[in-house]
Image 1 (tube, rainbow, N blue to C red):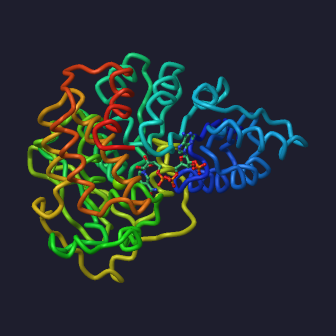
Image 2 (spheres, rainbow, N blue to C red; image 1 turned 90 degrees about the vertical axis):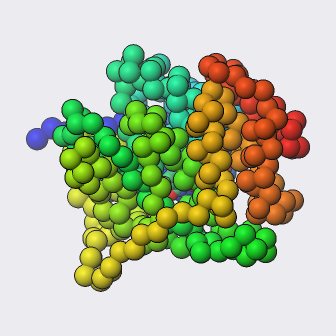
Length: 382
Ligand code: NDP
Ligand code: MG
């Protein structure tokens, strides 16, 4: 039988999600990559170009793009650069899907333009909804574009809602591994190093999200993301620590039935599901063995110790540009922490300081949101 080829653009293809997205494509002959984009890792991008033969790529940094252009001059591939190039790759005419797998607020504009160009969005880049959910969600509705969650918790909620669209959500239960510092006191956290923070117990991810998982800021960002994706007030989203990361999240309905999605912690499943929804395709590896696990455990998060999570709820209560300020301050602070310039506990402190100081905007435009990053740098230093 003739199968339609699924054409996909991937921005952030050299990262953790991007490279797992390419693994999904590699395992599915009915998928084809049309465009790829990265920031500067041209060594990996060249390998990807030679294997997946996209017609266009973007390297954000211009000098790296020129270098890559020279390296792949034997191939028929266009090499673009900068935000214009990133947007062109995200909106490629032939692609049906955009897998948005860049890290940080840089994802907002290409995703916005891809929605305008009516691409289906497989969304890993949570910062887009955190900062601009009030613009992205109505636009997606207007353009009749699905936003298909890739984040494992949101994919689990999405799967738990299959066939339930008419039923009211009573509560979303957002699971959280607890990260490498689960059970630590504030005193313990004073001493942790970058190396400690990068050792996530269950997931192998990019550096920024790994640190976010250690501070629990990632969970704060995910509550915001879930609130936009599933049109649910943050007050009805409960964070539950579940160290085994097997229940990826759950929905409780009004009759108190709780529907959850389970699986081994591997991002390939949510990536593939976003690209094949509503169909499920076979997955070679990672069958869940509940007998081997034996038991599953649950705890409440400690927001006195993990202040970043509490601040996320505060940011949602304030609304307007405050979630964007929370996100921007975190991006800057995590960068500083990874560079060894600040301590682990300075991350939530910097977020708090930034939220206190930055002027409130009730209904921020895209420009206001992008401006937040520059302004936040003024307040907490580059
Ligand atoms: P990584 O740091 O591993 O990868 C980031 C990717 O984005 C790289 O390809 C990087 O390119 C690219 N990139 C960064 N800046 C730019 C830019 N200016 N222009 C073009 N490309 C750029 O991140 P992850 O894959 O871990 O995370 C990606 C997103 O997915 C994040 O928003 C994260 O929160 C979310 N997510 C990740 C999960 C995971 O398991 N990793 C799980 C759930 C969500 P280069 O390599 O050249 O620097
Ligand atoms: Mg997640």
